Length: 257
Ligand SMILES: Nc1ncnc2c1ncn2[C@@H]1O[C@H](COP(=O)(O)OP(=O)(O)OP(=O)(O)O)[C@@H](O)[C@H]1O
Image (cartoon, rainbow, N blue to C red; front, top):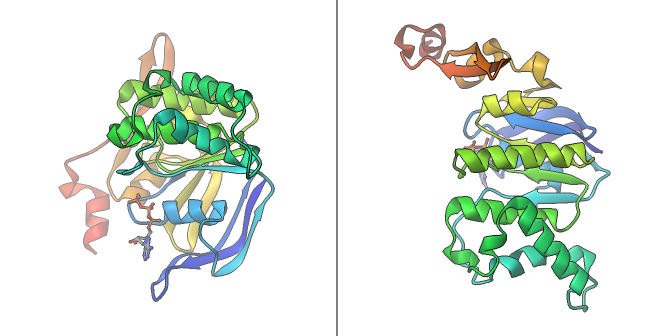
């Protein structure tokens, strides 16, 4: 449904963010991991059509809903209107939203768990609340592929869990889901596929179970990442932890050379 073929992107007068990239996304959940500044947002924007590739081709066979990273906002709209605006592509240019559009908006607010915020001003919300509103706004447009930039970065633990479950539900309903994250343990929980950005010409894609190993994560972040199995109500669950005493770790030595 989404594809990059020999794709390259660079900002004007800058080095390549990625080059000779080949990716094929066929639906389900795909998580993108990479260190700060490696190009995750840029890659999402290229796949969404918000940035234009410098080289190669992007193929888009799906209607895309894009959820940007939550940012400060001066929009004085109510949450309800803000989400309703996501319905725009379902409403003809000169038509007012119908009762059906309003009912759909209410249903999505409930599904995301923010119906109690409907009448609040978007500008007055916290970062986490805004993040949930932006997810609702993308969903209300009934896209086929939901692309989310760090959708849980501003959320507390319960809301992180709620959004992860929502993304799994949406994928189970047939929606493609592509997200960036700095939480490898969330990627293990979500399953599906992963994309790992290590360098402009080193972008790997594969099943989470095969690609997301201690060695790959340690290389990716330059800090030792170790997995452990814990008992989660009678079932084995993998958790990850980093070694903070990095002074003697192989990755610290690697960074020194
Ligand atoms: N508009 C721009 N003009 C020039 N350089 C940019 C622009 N936007 C981003 N960059 C640079 O491109 C690189 C990749 O940025 P990007 O936001 O895609 O990274 P990221 O992996 O999403 O980072 P983070 O995890 O910190 O959000 C960074 O070095 C950034 O400084």
